[in-house]
Length: 449
Image (cartoon, rainbow, N blue to C red; front, side, top):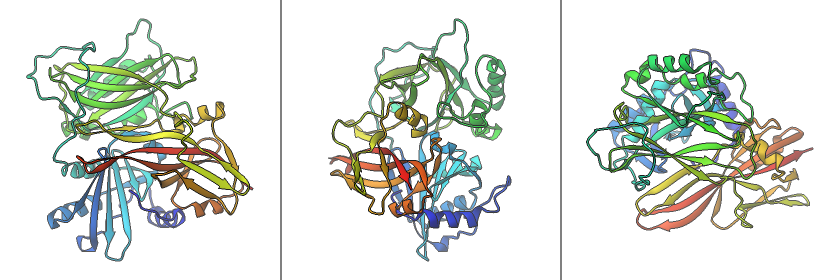
């Protein structure tokens, strides 16, 4: 995950590999053989765990899974999705490396996001999770929420579950409707029936273009839930929410069963300091990674928690400082992720994607500007390290990911928005043999003449 590679070299390699990509897709690692692999690491985020694969049988299975990966067109919509990312990094005998991040219907191949065949991606994700022997217990949430259904199930021990989530804005209005609304989907037919029953109430169509105040469409999100998905004994939870402001965002932070056997889904409502006054409805797609563990007889509780903006500035302690020519700025630090020790395990959180909030930063004049100069330099605060650079155009569209500041010299004249992603190391947890950490995407405007 922390490899530093040249953006231009990566682009050239990927273009040569994927230039023949069509609707039938391409298998970039179909020629990979076990004898070619010197080492293989699997990183799971969350819980930010890296496993080295050395057993020959496991390596053989891993290579077979990588052979089956199918990529379609490049599509950065996958960067807006939330959930667990399983990344495999293999080192070949010739010294070259390949990185494959499995994320449902998306694959991050050498850090570039593509649409992908769902089944091979999910198989790779499941293979990575098979090496986790224990899930961290994040504690039991309060038991004061209102139940949405009843259950007579036996009471299991409290435990948290890994999950993936999609957050889809689906504006609409239903007179007298009460929120949240939770719907358990157990088949493709049920998902189709839900769409037909609600298409006139909410915006459930596809979105040909995604703007700063939108997400992909409901039907776009549904593409990953085909008959094969449900045939593998997996279900889907749809959570319908209404917000008094279109600026509010959401993050599912925990899914668990409490000591009464009730399912508790904790959702952070991320409320900016300044928001618009338009109403907004959202559909949250929740997939639990252990299959159809939720049944219709189960109690499902939605625990909504209000939080401040995840874009809060760290007082006067900025992670980085940029100097370029005679100018110097402190980029705006946007919260990206965190891993905090609870005493029982690490609590992992992800921030709102920059593409959903960048226009709000501009409206509040939060992003400083600096002209590019040959002496462009970055100074890091103590315990802060570089990870990558996200490059956006003036329409807030992601142009690419850079891993070397020297690549800025190749940009054409114009204005860009940059997000320098850094990791701030926190306290060392002796019990876990690991540091706490916080990720920041430090945002600013770059003027190239």
